[in-house]
Amino acid sequence: MEPSIDPGASVRRAAPTLHVRFSDADAIPFPTRTVERGDALYCMGEPLRSLYTVQSGCFKTVATYPSVNDDSAPHMQVTGFHFVNETLGLDGVCTSRHESDAIALEPSIVRIMPVGILEPLCREYAAMQHELLAIMSAEIVRASRLALMLGTMPARERVAAFLLDFSERLDARAGSARGQTSALILPMTRADIGSYLGLELETVSRMLSKLQREGAIGLNGRQVRIVDRTMLEHH
Image (cartoon, rainbow, N blue to C red):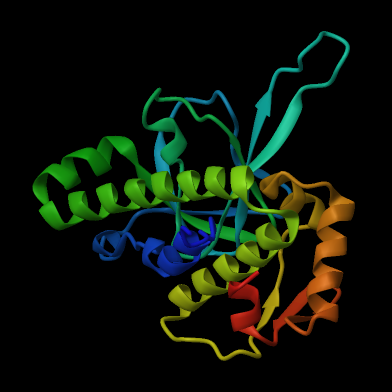
């Protein structure tokens, strides 16, 4: 008998490796911009002018797709969440136009790295070029993992994997490991989580409640406390 395969195991094992900082640009005095909650940093279809590193706050990226018929509204899909030290704008590198809207989930500050300046810097500094390639590779891997999750995982596993990924990205930002009772403040709504995971809002709420009943997490509004990380990892 062949051993059973957990489709989410590879996603969970490698998740911490995806946090890549653009540290070689830290010493360069790039300008910054403040984006208020609900405002767009850039919009779908706009020309790519800069890449952006999140200095504080967080963003969601939202893509809009045409409806299947003229009577339906266009479909909007949350394609990612971006936290401190993570890079926004990579969706525009291929076509030189952004493929999504980047919306601030809370008051945020970004560092603006104009593409016209960044390209010659990467040619001059091999380490910076390597970091940019690593950041782009991490985005590709994240997209592949999301596709795997949406195609193979049941709803409970999707929500558990999302919470683990969120926690691990915060760990990487802080540069330290969290304990099993770590508390997370979710800056996004449950509707945003559902859109990202391909689930209905009600399903996300049910799965969070189920995880709470099973003792894996504690819930208090937007605060999620991870009580048993092992239980989340094996869902």
